[in-house]
Structure formats: C-alpha cells, structure tokens
Image (cartoon, rainbow, N blue to C red):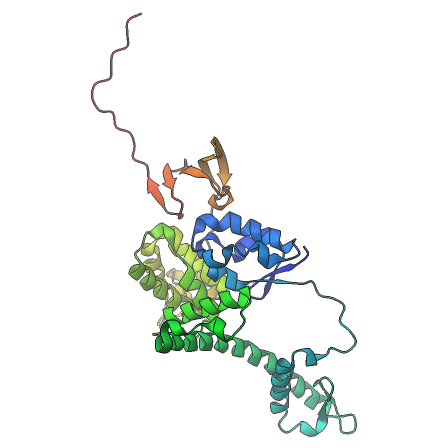
Length: 363
C-alpha cells in the first residue's frame, strides 16, 4: 500500500483486520459496508486517499472520524527537529521539565531541539536515571489523556457556541478544517450531546463514540429503547473496563441474541462480589472480564443466502457481509427469513393450501 490505514490510531494490516475494526453494525447504513471497505482499500493505493473517500464524509461521519491515512515511515535523520511543530515541542518540553522536580540538576534541555539529555558534568545515579525514565513515560500518558479530554472539551464548547450564537456560529469561520478534522469535530459534538447527562468513568471517548453510532438493527428498537439498551450495555462495559474491541463484541452479542439474553447476562454478573469466586463460577456467574468476553464472543457461522445481483440469482454460503453491494431480494435459506437493507430480517410465512386443488385435465 502507498498509505498505511489507521483506525483510531491503530495500524490496520489487511482487509480482514479492517473489517474487524469497522464492523457493519458500526455504520449509519449497514448496506454501505462492502463499498466503504473497498473504497478505503482503494484509497490506500491512490496518490490522494481523501479524494477517493470524500463521498463518505456526509454518509458515514462516525467512521470517517476514526479513519486516517499515514505515509510509511521514512528513515529518521540523526537529529529530529521538533521545531517543525513548535506548539507540540513547547508542550512536551514543559511537561518533561515539570516532571523533573528534584532531579533538575542532572539533566539539560538542548536549545535547538528541546530534547532532554543527561548533564554529563553532574550525571544522575543509575537509580535516578531509571526514575527519570519512568517519569518520561508519564509524558506519553499525559498526552493520551489530553487528547481524550480535548475531544470532550471540543464537543462541550461547540455545543455551547451553537446554543448561544445559533446559526451565526460556524467552526469553519475560525478554523480551516481538513476532512478528518471536520469529521472528528462533528463526532465530538454529537458524542458529547449523547452523553451530556452522564459519561462512564472507566470508558474512553472512543467507547462512547462507538456506542453512540452503533445501530443494533436486528432488534428493531425505537430510538428511546435503543438508547436505554446502549446505557445498559455500557454499564457492563464500564464495570469490567472492556476494551473498545471487547465492547463491540458485547454490542454484537445484544444485536444477535436479543435483549432477553442481555438480561440473562446481567443476572449472572456478580456486581457486588457477594459470592466466593469458586462458588460463583460453579453457579455459572460472570465474575471477571475474561469470563464475560468468553460468554459474549459471537462467531457467526456460515449461512446460506439466496440473492439477486445484476438480474442474476446467486447462492452464497458464508457471512452476510460478504454479499456484493447492490444485492437485492436477499433470503437466508437456513431459516427462511428475508434480510432487509438495514440488516434486520423478517419471517417468511409458510404457504398454507386454500380451496380445493383443480382437477388434472383429462388427456
């Protein structure tokens, strides 16, 4: 690939991993799934990837805010110049200096780059050098938390601006937004509004964002019931501090097996740790993260689909997502259900003979 594909900052190696990171139920319209995946892969091979996927900016803003294309790493020069990004350099420099309390005499900050090195005239002990190393790791952790807080902050402030100024306010009046920044801004605003009345402390902005944009089409819920179920699922995710990928499995479990099975899982979770661990496991309780993930992991088995594509009927054995974009009249012949464009399905009633069959004509 000319460009590397990143989803939420994580490198995606191939199409299979891309489909795992962007499952169909995360889209505004699940029927877009195969086309979107194909366009992302095509964009990674093109000279200008954002132009290839520009058509998805309005159609799938949530996914577009997660997506980024980065150039493969080049050979790093002997000295990296942070001066190209002065604000980043200043923040990193201030953070590093602030963490050196009590050890300032043992380090120096180079004027040309801002990088920290050991003061060779007054070097720290080996133990102190280890302590400095540990503190520097906190700079990275702080940057990640700043990014997290910044997204909520952006959503909160823009929501306030629109409340106060109405249509007179537009972000683009003040900031030149790239496509990625535009999508991220819209997502920050919508996610903040969705959780204005309460966020889950153990879950990241990405957890909240993905939950907000997940549709759960097979359950055929109205928006109020969908939001109520979403918060129930996030309560479980928050308690066990699930990763984003694990939370997606929880939502897929709800979508595939229904609300009754979520209620069953809730009943089996020992939130208060009232039972002995061995006793709880013997009783089939869900007592930890690993136990929960094992229960909710859904491996969709191959199914048989009959569908029409470009005026021709086809049979496919596999997963629904593998059907071509534009397939119509999709039927699952395993249980004879009609699959709708939004991913939901309807029962096909069995034919019941009515009347008296006509007599066969005499030859």
